[in-house]
Image (cartoon, rainbow, N blue to C red; front, top):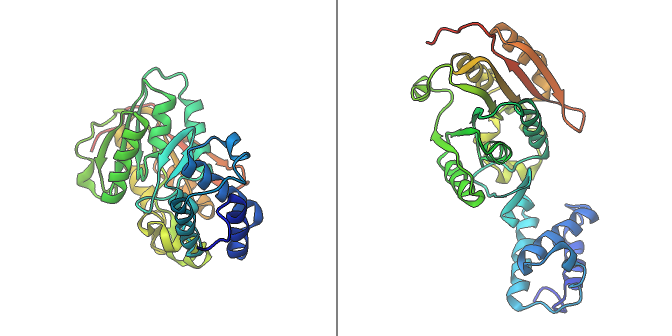
Length: 298
């Protein structure tokens, strides 16, 4: 066996020796804690008490498998198979991007803005794991939340998370770049659209962490260098048609494309455009509103 004694203390020592070139000591400590809480089905408080307890052979195999995957730079959240997002425990694996804390800030912004709406109609486009739509539904149970996603893999995960959280979403397969895929929507019918679409130009691939490139779905990350705003532009054009008068569009954005995004939304006639930084101080979120006069449907 890969450790001398069947104890958590020994596991900790071995993980530290094997992973110190990939993770900090505090990251390794957190990884072991989360793996142990899940594997032994214990509380964070109980974790403090189990360090000297003997582990079974199957427990040791579980840690060994996790270690192999960590050495292969697989994201820890995929190994754990779950992630907390806005107080929801979501299933996560390589079918969709790992929900990031910055996206929770976007959800928080929308929640604050819509708090006076009794039954808001919300659409989350490029929904992935469903984290945004499910978080908003959990915060506004009276809302009518829809989630649209193109990838069959992500759609299956989204449906699993809807069941897992016992929340109700209207889920549809949609290629947001395809004109025909909007035909089932009614014009002027949504209070809010939100999207965290692919927005990383291919040229920035070399700047990405290896664990992201090796394991997260690239279709959800990258756009061409020639047209990095393609998803934002098409979604914003359609939002003018399908949002109600005075409806609001929210995006998570690429911090390097802020100026272009402002020009795009202003050029399309949106008003009350607002840019917000995330907790790291990066331009991360944008909000824009349709004007309150009538828009002709296409």
